[in-house]
Length: 387
Image (cartoon, rainbow, N blue to C red; front, side, top):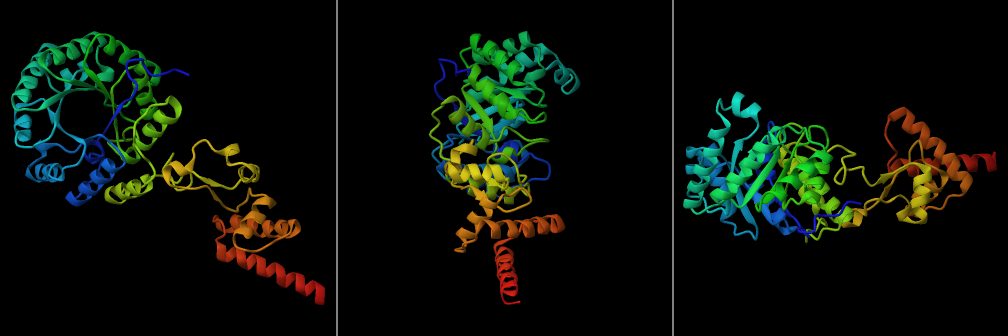
């Protein structure tokens, strides 16, 4: 297994649920919801939060300041275009760092900005200095880094470092990266710069988490995440996947607790109106639910037989349900939990009723219905005995 770069023994999670997460189409958090989300993120140990876009207007700035005024034990960031007016909008906000973002791919430099590479480099030097003069620490955000000319990318990073920035954000803005290229590109940046490097991955190809891992292994010092993977288009790297994966797969020490993550996931789901799918990794309602007979039998003998992620880490537990693919052992177990003893033959008879019910309704039977199956079985047995 690839191990983290020697220079990086830990990594900083910079969660952007309150900025890029809220940029998901149709999503709008209230100030109270933002404060609640920020509070839970910090309580679980997230050390950095990107909390808004000051240039959006007075209401956005008020919500940012409301979070600042909470005195949370986390570093707070805001996002800004590399533009004088945008930077002025940040001026009175007592945040720790501003991310000054500018396109660095020829595609966007030419067709979005109608500018040149030299203009981009000059803008970085000018605006980083202006932000420093305002008292901010600075991250230079390389929008569309994944499509940038790689030599020019290094020029951008060099210019940012020379101007006084402390961090460079490698943004896979349109979600086209894959882990092998991400690894080599981040390694190349790290070899040629002393800046902190942050990975900002989008999930258009379903690879945001994998690309975040690759960036970490390549030497990145910071990873952007969002709760439930919320964000533009297909979303960002999911906080729960990145944190659990870095710890479980690569041995990072993040000091982040996921014990109450279900509460945070539900809060963000409700506030955004975007609910994870039933089988969404880590947070989906069904990811610790088991039906197939061979799996249930194995779990009952030793949970490690079919457990890749321990649900206790997330304050959850395995759930066994009865359905089409269940076996008799699962039936016996289910009824034992209800305080009812059934024989193997009774279990087989009940299982037939379960399968008929699922086929007809597309739903698994609840406890009330399971008890009715048991009662029907008893009635049938009595009728046979007494004629």
